[in-house]
Image 1 (spheres, helix red, strand yellow):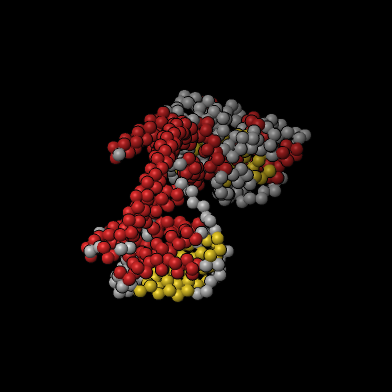
Image 2: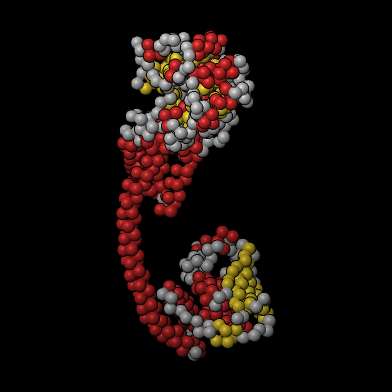
Length: 607
């Protein structure tokens, strides 16, 4: 048995490892991205980073400059207003050399303003390779402009392939990008390997952006700033200037929060990227080894549930596993910025469940068939046993009746018998009576188990039944010099099956005599309490221990104190008594103290 259990456990582990290995050979990037994005959407609200300020060319600006359009002159006015408030960085996502200008003088003004700003950078929305630095240079007369790549990637041909921006470049071919370059000024991180969650992909060091919710950063309108209506303190701040007109898709990206084509502007996205670098709060994605271990654990739980638990309990365990792991993944993400893999463990759960449930159903069907066959065989055996007991009991009763009759005839003429002969015939008579009682109990047991007993209810005085029972038992009591004391209260007639109740009371009184020492008393009482006829038989016998009382009414049960004694019994009397009492909708119980006596109480409803 132990070897079979060990073999099953080993097989379960091997199957879990095999399925996990098979599942983990595939990345399931798209499914993983859905669970990744869901964790972002379930993040609590975050406070705005007051270090970064946004100036947006919004719908209000477009409408306000409709006649001339956004020109270098308007751009210079805004830049001049910003410069006067002494920011640390001014990052422009708008290329000034792409704006129309009315005169060459505007170029000189821009050069002058740029020279006064501490750090004025033009965001270059592309990556460059070694030897391509000329792409960052502007043609005359804008050669003074400083361009720096600041790419926010999107999953187009790699990873999830859903065009959602989740990653930002740290460097490409050792060329440091704009966002970490700005962050270095504030956090002092010089070694790119120190950035949290940093990983290498196609010669590019990247991190996963720790996005906050859309509109976390308040935006100032480009038009308001141009008119001197600046609502924010820009001193020592990072100022980003860009488009956010809620109309042009090229100015926007898709994020984990929204797939809307104008859900989040590149202007705001760059603020999230810069904040991620400054706080060094990039998301850490667990590696394939950890994902494999988690997948194996989930597979083991599901396989155990499917193989060993009932379908309902197994389903509860599987659902709790899914929700529990989801809760752990969310806590790790929100609390520690760790994104554990969820696609592979979830797929392992579903694969294990749907692949092995049919196997479990086949096993259960086979067990059910085997149990059905066994039950059918047991039913046949039980029927044969009952028929045999019934036949043997009836056949034994006839010769026993003859023996008792002959013994009575012989004892009727005591003058013809010697003392020894009289004692021998008396012993024969008692033995035949004991055997008759045993056979009667066996017959009653057969009737009980075949449910053939039907009550024959007739009005009867319980006191009369008890008087008849006690009268028949007095001879046995006198042999042990036991006194039977009866205290009966007057009772109304109750509808009972007289024969069954006589059998109940006879069993209780005879047991009291059988298990009581000589020269003791037995008290038999009746009374009416709360609509119940209460009959009690109390003795001063050997008693019953607390551990044995709970089994005393069990079929064939006999207490340890009498098994090795000369007291005979079948262990059926109390079982039948309980059954007959409960047929009358009553109840029977016992209270006992070892070596002091027992009190059996029978309660029969008046109605």
